Length: 60
Length: 251
Image (cartoon, rainbow over all chains, first blue to last red; front, side):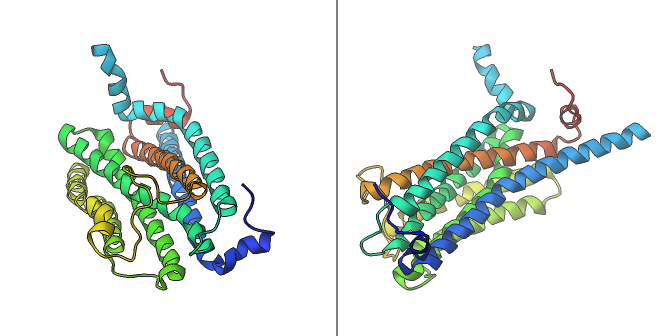
């Protein structure tokens, strides 16, 4: 098993199919990262709002 | 007998699932990153180019795994909906809510990578062909469940309506699988079949298997992350979520 490309330029060109290959992988990467980030942000935001509500109650 | 089912009841309650799943997350994250990393380098750099398609065939390593999970995810959503309908299990409703946007995103990536692969291979981004059209229907079914959920003020009614829509939509799944056999289609027949050897050289096939496995783990990870956020959102007024937010120790 050996690399199929000689150098980075040839790898990025993908034998002339570069735009197709990289747009498919690029969009997939963006969506997969978004899928992980979305619940993590929501999780943190809920805990923060619970803390804020608790602090308000303590004051009254 | 009673003891044997205790773990099930503990896992079936939202706080129980929240606590147990917290221990699984690091393992799933590491496994997904390793499998997807290895599969990506293997498929993009080391797998031989296709004799006819050249390097555009490398899109297979994202297109097929993502399409697999877009379909498998529908079963997860529909099964969770059925469990919620039959046993009124709150956790199942949360899993169904978590699975809908995840499935929609994966179906979108499957359609997009397929379109981009179609251009150099078939000469067109899009055809109204049985496989592609039924995948578009799948996307609308997922989005329908997301929209239906938001359209109800009453959570109980929303859960039941979404479950019914998800279950009715399962008729689309065998149509997607069989579309390449039933109708004349530009889309090639399935690469992987349970009943026969794959129609692919092992050097090309092995990285594909690694990517499929990696995406299964990734799916499990995101489904659990979504479910945990959903649990917190619905139980934000309960004592255990308050303890969790304040960092208080829990018994």
